Amino acid sequence: MEEYWELLKSNRQRTSERRIEDLFEEDQHRFQDFSIITEDLILDYSKTNIDKDAKTNLVNLANFGSIQNKVDDMFSGKEINNTENRSVLHTALRNFTNPLVVNGVDISLIVNQSLEKISAFTEDVRCGKITTNSGDAFTDVVNIGIGGSELGPKLVTRALYPYHDGPKIHFVSNLDSADLTDTMSQLDPKSTLIIVSSKSFTTLETLTNANTIKKWILSELGPSGMKHFAAVCGAKDKALEFGITEDKIFEFKDWVGGRFSVWGPIGMPVMLAVGISTFRRFLEGASSIDQQFQNSEIAENLPIMLALIGIWHASICQYPSKAILPYEHRLEYLPMYLQQLDMESNGKSVNRDGEFIAMQSTPISWGQAGTNGQHAFYQFLHQSNQIVPCEFILGANCFEQDLRIDHHEGLIANCLAQSEALMFGIDPGKHFESTKLANNREERKHTNTTNAHLFCAGNRPSTTLLYSKLTPEILGKMLALFEHRTFVEGLIWNLNSFDQWGVELGKGLARELSGSIKGNGDLRAFSSSTLGLVREIKRLKN
Image 1 (spheres, rainbow, N blue to C red):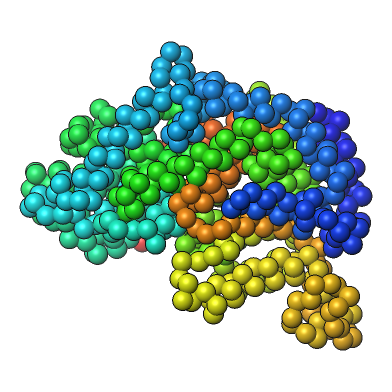
Image 2: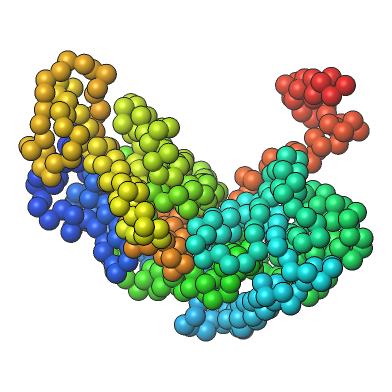
């Protein structure tokens, strides 16, 4: 495998002296050769500095790393999460084709029973069979959870807004009391359903918010207000102890990681908003990518090729960050979702064998939706001395057909123009006289100028993920594609993408500090900086 890393480094040395647009002049079929086109998803990576040799070596890197075999290991239920001795089976939550038995346990049966239970509950809430304390239908739902218990459901609920026909969904995650109180100010406790989502049912932020809203509900409705609570967790006993009745507790297993869990019970807010039939379409879209991931050759495999592009940019080109740029307002939460997916999964410097790795692994993920970002940070993308690979995400169609010409076609033009401008830039001594993008660089009108402030270096890589329309199926496909991309990148870096021990360090220290801030703890183990800040906090509180 080291051989291919060295070959890729040699490729990089050669490409560092060459501009991306030159590759198009050398290869009239570059778009066809450096894109993957399926019926409703197209990945274009022709605007990167990957040439044919680099592509061959990237594919060989995946082949030599036995990526396909390791993919099979995940889908078959082997314990690939080696630091926690767990299988990784979030894909089983959307498996409609192949029965799966792991260690004598029928995983498919468990998944189907869970889906049937939660389907019945959500449909009964939506149609008014399960009612409030006073016998009325629930009009609002509050999901209390954080991390994977919030980011996935919040993204999907927002993205599928055109399909909403259920109660209004709210999300509370932050420990800051403002998050909860601002949400509660919009609600009537008499018509609000509370979902407490926590795998362990011990998460500080979630339990603090849940206990506060519990006091609010019970103060208004009395003990029977617990009828307004449901739980999604992996710790049934703790949910029962909280006071939630068994029929409203929906469990998921430890082989489903938090940031991969929107496909199952954690997706309850989505099911309540859009209904189970639409949610199944979301699962079916993801399942189709699962099959493509397992069965396609590497060069035509969407998740693997997307991962190899990421490896090229992060480890070979050593770009420290990447921008997620969805030109779809309803995907406004996608950059945050991918931050957790990538950076919590692969934000590590120790490999699966406990050894420190020398190469740069996952980059910082950041971004914003659509043209809003153009007026915020695209200046940096075009003229900073840092190169940031950009991932454009674009729908060919919108839901608002009466506004298609004025709005959506302008959105498409802006997205394509940005990827073009990032690649070409502006030569120091030349400036475009016309703002109209020409098909050929030679057709552009130029006028001489010595204004260096107009200089845009260009030669900045980008990919474009084009999809037909943001339907439930397409959304499922995209999220599964990104999940598998993250997994494959982790495999190539030899990282365990399914644990997050770094998250636990700050949590433990916070528990120790909590008592001290309240006035009854021992701070001797902390730095003078922390001691000083605690003293100042106490002073400011008085």
